[in-house]
Length: 140
Image (tube, rainbow, N blue to C red; front, side, top):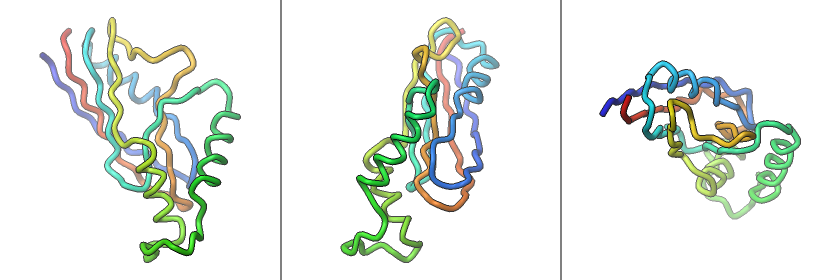
């Protein structure tokens, strides 16, 4: 079994989805692993990971709008407010989504569907540097 670990640093500009599919595909291609599993893990508690459609940007618009309505800022019952009004809602959004995703590697390629892309979902309003750990294990 071969193993490769890498870290991708993403610069976000605030809330939204940031596609990282090409960076992940490059790692898989460089690895020469034919069959395996890629684990993608984000090291932060106020953003998350999604596999989502990457063809129509309206999907991103609708997802952002849905989460803004589902977990709005300014809920008066929140206790954790020292890092700003968007911080606790960001933690809740992260808890509702995922911080780790497993993607199979088949015939040396990510087994994503035709219209699927891998995204970092930034839940904070201000820009951040986000570290995403990629761990690929498999056979050549």
